[in-house]
Each structure stands twice: as C-alpha cells, then as structure tokens.
Image (tube, rainbow, N blue to C red; front, side, top):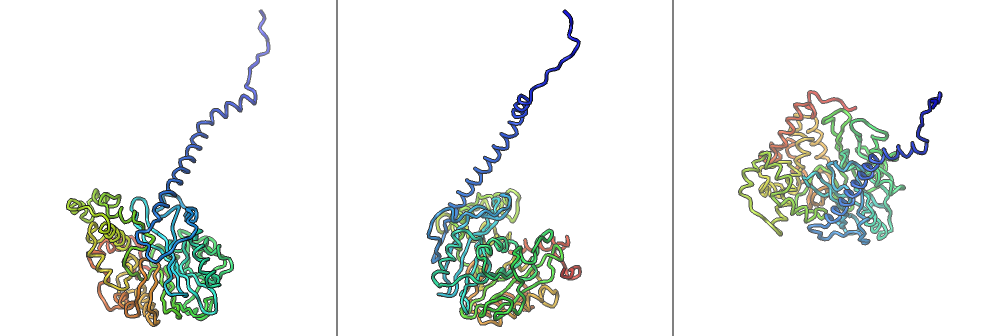
Length: 456
C-alpha cells in the first residue's frame, strides 16, 4: 500500500477542549466552593454562639429591644475574623434611664477575643437638650435593636436626634461613628480635634471618615460651633504621645447643666458590679482556672500563676461569677496584676475610689510624671481642673459603672498629674504596665519630652 504523502494530525475540537479544561479546573473550583462553605458555616456558628452569649449576668433596670429577633442584634465588624475585637457578629443593646426625661444610656459589649475573652461595656449617652432635640454622645454599633431603643425615646418625647458627637480619637470608639451617623442623615455631626487614621491618613480622616462632620473646639459652648444650648465642653487635646506626630489623643468632657451630669469617654471609670452587657458565660469562663488565658500564663510561667494554680479551688454560682468579674475587670485595666488567680485585693482597692483614671490610660498615655515634668501631664492637669469647675453630681463614663460623684472626687482621681500625689496605682498591680511603658519608651514608640515631635 502506498503511504499518503500528506501527514495529518488530529486535534481536539473546541468543544472537547472546553470539556478537558473544565475537568482540569474542577478540583480548584471544588476547593474554592468548599472554602466558601466552610467560612459560611463558621460565620453561622459564630453568630449563633455570640447570640447565646448576649444573655446578661445581671440585667437590673436595663431594657432591651421589644422585637426579640436575633437578626436585630446582627452587626458584622467588617474586619477579618482573626481581628482581636469582639463581638464580631452579634451584640445586644441595653438601655436605662439615668435622669428621668433627660438622660438615657445604651450599652453594648466590647472586648478582646482570641481566647482571652476579656470584655467590658461600651456606653452611649442620649441627652434631651434645651430648645428641643436629642444629643448623642459616643455612638455605638447601630444594630436594629439599638436604633429601635433610640426611636422609642424619640417617639416618647416627640423629639429627634439633632446632634451626634464623637468625643475621642481612639479607634474602638470611632469604629461605629460613620455608620451610626448614616442612620441619622439630618443630625449635625461633631468630632473631637486631632482625628486621624493609621498608618496613613485617608480621605476625611480629620473628620473620622464622616464628610459632614465639624471639628469641635474648646470653648464651643452655648450653641457655638453647632453645639446645642445648655451644653458645655472642655477638650483635652494632648501633644503627640507616641508612634508619630499624626497620632493624637483627644477627649471631650461634656457638661449637661439641666441634669448636672458630666459625660466623659475614657478619662475616668467607676468600678462596681458587672455591667449588663457582660454575660454569665463570660464570667463563668473567667472563673474557670482552665480557661485559655490562665492556661497560657501557667504554661509560660508568668505572674506566678504556675505556683498559685496548684492551690486553686473551684468556685461556682454567685461566688464564681464574682471571681470571674474581678479577674476580667482587673485584666482589662492592668493586663497583669499582683495576683491573677485571686485579684480581690486589687479589685477592692479600686472599688474604694469613687472615680479612678484607668491604669492603661494613666500609665501608657498620660504618663507617670507631674505637671512640672512633662507637657502631657501639664495638659492633663489643666484640663482636669477646668472640668472640676462644673457643678456636676453624676459622672457617666463610656465604660464600667455610672458614678454619683462631684468635683472633689474628680480632683482626687487626677492628684498625681496635678502634682498632689506620688503614686496613682498600687506598685505591685501596675508593674506590668510600667514595664510595658518602659519598653515602648526605649523603642521610641512612646515619646519622651526630649524626642516628642511637634503637632503635624
């Protein structure tokens, strides 16, 4: 037979080529679909877990939303789930009336996850102001439940939210600012000075991301600068404390004259009973000596936990809840106190004060120096004295308890920075924070007077 002179090579048709490509891509597509399904299941499980963790240990006189729908508590932080901030999926809102017809507070849970499960409450305050309207101080996550509780007050009074104030530059307070403002498009919006984003400033960073916001300045009282009448402010605007010249710390103290109430964000706290946003599960976990945080400290041999852990005893019920709250509160304030397993002495020392500057703030931001030694301490002292001039009877901070306190109690909290005292906190309790500050100063992350840059 003769061989054909034309050599032919068969190639797969376009249709068969497509089938081959699809077949080879199936494993990758299957992995992608499986990954999405795993993430979806993890999110659903996380949402259900956090919903169950919304039940308060002590509800007291606080009220929650009437709908009772789990979806009314849904609010995703919008950051990767490995981020430290919790809760990530769901948070309950608790409302209480502090001064009848004039002052209401709204509280949610806020804390650190990744097994540490250290949470406190974060508080928004709603004021009825002269001339009509409602004023929001320190907005929180605008869940459906939160907005429902605000609308109930609006409907009861026949007033609407007219002004919203972000009183600080710290991230944990401004993360919900812009979305909250979007739900009240007609309200005036004010922010404390020195707003920034880090590591670089984005659009409207100086307005905390809200284009319609105005920067509130010290002395913007009695209707000046968009502030409603009957309100006065004193602003702490510190020189650069650390990281860079653009990273600023400011706080607005606000006085509501008709109720004789002082509102502050982080400047002081009143340590007392567990807030309603802390669940019984949170407290029971911290009372358990086998929890993640204590186990990690025991394995690392830190804070003497390994030795003291051998002498532990199980505590349940009310006793366990009390221990859990003491451990959680002291860890959030000191990071590491003199006795991690039994912090009752540290706890009682702070409970004995009507007002106290939180140790983390007092050590890492305000610093240990007196007013004659450092311009930061001098700014804190001058601001605290200007706030003490108001005739307030109630202090509402953004965290922990509400305090029945006046100017004398306020001055006592700032004695060290006013040059009237030598030690703000027990030395054994604050040692961990002092060591952290010393390390950050050596690394020039926290500035000393000699290397502090000018405001940018």
